[in-house]
Length: 336
Length: 253
Image (tube, one colour):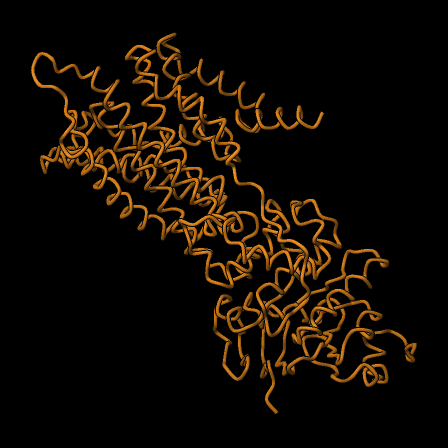
C-alpha cells in the first residue's frame, strides 16, 4: 500500500462549539436565583422534555426512523415511578430512575423486535399502534393504574435520601422543585447530553448514520442492520423513559395522557422545530415548545388552535428548524 | 484444482422467468475476470446470489471450499467477498473519508463500540486516508459523498469494498454512467489496486474495450446460462459470442 504524507482526521470535534454552550450553561445554573419559581419549574419541564427529544432524535436524526410512539417509553418511565411508589413504597429518586430504565429497556426490547424490520411510514404506524396499546391498558386497568384519575406521586427524596422536602409547614413543594429538584434535573440533563453526544460520535453512531443514508450499502460493509436499529431503538426509548421518570415529581400525577399518541406528536414536533439534523436542535426545540405551549395555554382557551398556527408558521419559515436556520445564517455570514 | 469461488448448478427464478439457470461459475485465486452479456443475461443476478443480496433457489456456492449458499451477507463479507454496485451505493451525507472509515470500523468489528469516539481512532483514519489516496480521492476526503462527481462516486464505491480487505471483489459496471474519457483512468486505478494486492476480481462490464483490455479471462452469459468461458483471445474468436453479444462476425483485434 502506498504511503501518504499525512493522516486526514475529521475536524468535526466540536470542542470549539463547546464555548457556545458556556453562556447557556451559566444561564441554566443561575436560573433559580434570577427568575421566579414558576419560570424555573417551567425550564425544568423543558429540560426533561429535551432529554426525551434527544432520545427520540437518535432514531429520527441519526438512524432515519420516524417514531410516532415515543409517548409509550415516556409513559413507561413515568408509570414505573408511580407504581414503585404505590406498590413498593419506594421514594428514592435514584431507585425510581433505575426502575424506569429497567422498565423502558424491557418494553423497548420487545417493541423493538417488532418495529426495526420496518422503515418509513410502516415503522411510524407500528410504533404508534404499540404505544396506543399501552395507552389503552393504562386506561382499562384502572384498578392498577388509576385509569383517567392517574396515580398521585408524592415528591421523592433525592441523592439516596439525603435531600428531601422539608416536612411540616416549611415543606414548600414549589420551592423544592424550583431549587433542589431543578438542579437534580439539570445535572441529569447534562449527563444525558454528554452520553448521547458520545454515542452519536462513536463508531456505533457512525454506523447508525450509515444505515440512515443507505441500508443496502451498510449491509454490504457488514453492519447488522436490524440488530443496530434495535439497539438504537432501546437507547432512544431509555432516554425517553428517564425523561418520563424525571417528569413525575414536577407533575405530581401520572395520567394516561402521556401514553397517548398525541404526546408522541409533541416529541416529534420538538425535534422538527429545533432541527432534527443537528445534535442540539431537539434540545432547543423541546425548551422552546414547552414555553410556547405554556404561554398559549395561559393566553387563550383556544390555545391549541393558537399554538397550531404558530407552529405551522415556524415550520414553514424555518424548514431546517431553529438550530438548522441559525447554523445556515452563521455559515453564510462567515463565507461572505 | 481448487477454486477461490465455485458455483454448482446455481438457479434463481423470478416467477416464470429463470434469471440464472444451473450456472457453474468459477473464479481462480488472483485472476481478474470479466462477466459479459446483454441486459437480462443474468450477470447481476449471479453476483447478487454470490454476494448474498439474493438467495439461490437451487445449487451450491462454495467459497474457498466452504459452502456459503445459505450464509447471510455479513458472513460472506467476513469470508472475503465484497462488491460494488451498478447504481452507486454510498453514504451520501457522510464525507468520502467517513465512507471508507466506516468499512474499516466494520471490518475490525469496532462499530459495536458505543462509548468511544470514532474520531479518536487514529489508525483507522490513517488507513482510510491511504485507501483514498490509492483511489486518487485524497483531495476529496472531506467532501460529502453526495457532492462527488459520478466518476469519483464510482471509485469511492470500489474503495469502500476494497477497505473490507476482500479476497474476491465483484465490480458491477464500474464505468457505467461516466464519460468515455473518464473510463480508462477509473479502470487503470482499479486494476492497479486489484493487481498489486492480488485480489481476485470479477467485473461486470458492457464496454468491450474495457473488457478486453483489463481481464485475464472472460465469461459470457446469455439467457441465464454461461455461453462461453475463455481468455480474451478465445472469446474474440468464439463465434457464438461474437454473433450473440458483440454483434460483429469478426471483432476488431
